[in-house]
Length: 622
Ligand code: F6R
Image (cartoon, rainbow, N blue to C red; front, side, top):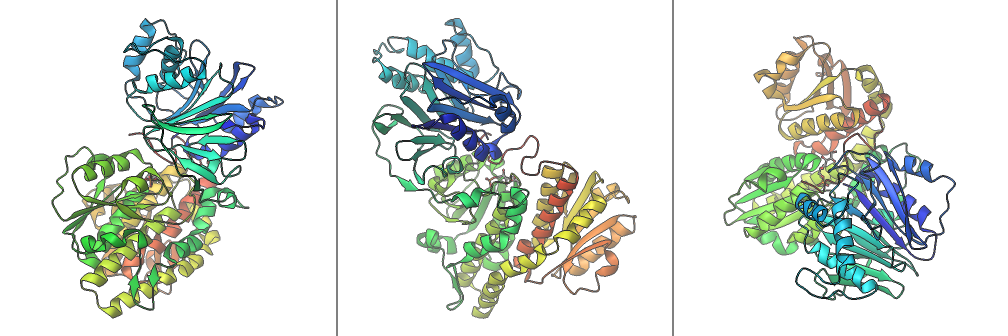
């Protein structure tokens, strides 16, 4: 949800900012812009749409500026046009700002600033930040009569004054036209990282934008700021207390964020699932001793094993993984579990009795609603664990303990490899809790064997790409689809529908198959493909019955079934056979052909798969 990048060093800033913005484009692509500080004035270039538009505007311009800020936008306040694009400069021309987040009290502040004589050009909340900093920068004292310091210390002071007036969330990079050797970053609620290179520094929303230049970074915490100048950098709280931060090694490498011959990140990430899952499982499945080792939560296993209730909370695809988790905890560990949309949980005044453990699931670790749900659960005294991909992200830091997915950066806006890994982690957790509570050694051993065979089985599914592409081609012009599954595969039906919706803009609904006859069956015609997940499982006969109901009404069926299942053939207009595995682990296999189906449908319809309209990868606003 918006990406920001800033450069301070001895190289021309412009190409570094553009390159950084491209790495962050998955966070938003409504507009883009940069501001370079050249001879005491800002050179601002902004464009609606993609970074490529901005590049076209900058073609032939090679600024010598070595200090600059850049932004790629996911619009919240104001339409995605040029005026609303960042960077925003205050009305005196002294302060330039890029911002990721939302300023909740911007309307009140704007009213006040207008009265004080400030002028505004855009509809954004960010311009208020620029003007507020600019306002204090021009003053000799703050509202309490405290005198402003001189020189560039005044810039830093003005940032602190302004931010003390602001409610909301922000990751900010700020420049002052009078201070050609100063770059300031500040964070609250939105991610911000400082890359520390040799005589150069980068501030960015995430490591992808800086890893080409340095692998050493500092992760700012909420309420902290960083001031970079020719002497190096210092980190402080927003109330001006020094803080010592540890320099950390960035855990992603450049090749992980390159396309490496794939057409899209989504295609790459679907294909990466076998290796990603191997990495996720590696060292955690102890086949020899028939147990699971999850170092990150080992101190909490006793509490988890005795839990009276597990609440899983997440959004979107991660919520679908949580739904699989509910089945896993109940079936394998026999612990009551329930799933909550994080956005609902946080406002619902939830009852968390003793013995309730909350598990938050998030690929990015930055989703605002999930983060707020974690805060809410912690306030109420629950043990809160995280299942997160991005190392050092806000949710990873806020939870009491957790398990990382270890699947590497997920850049495609549609989540794929994170889903399979989330399910893998939940399966490991449920198996281990089941082992400690009641499962027999043989059952655990079988589950573990099956779990380790999943990556190879996904490889076999991936080989069917061409066959799945043909199914997508035959159905791509159908504007309404149904996805149906039962039991463990019901959440997969929801996920299949979400994947199709978000990248191919086809309307799709996911349902527990038996629910169809309570209403949605009225929609069935030969124009509406119904995708069934009908693998061999405890409800196999039941789902065959549901397929019959659709076919009896002329509906066309795309059926994901178990390899070698001859019985299913007459029920499928299109058949996608997948390898067999035990029921609780099936979602990691059944979801893969649905990801591929959605991918191919979107490509065939000519959409930009990695940047679906209106979406952004990391939803850091409510
Ligand atoms: C869908 C998708 C979203 C995310 C959701 C939560 O493909 O990616 O639905 O799953 O925004 O994001 P995280 O997992 O980062 O909390």
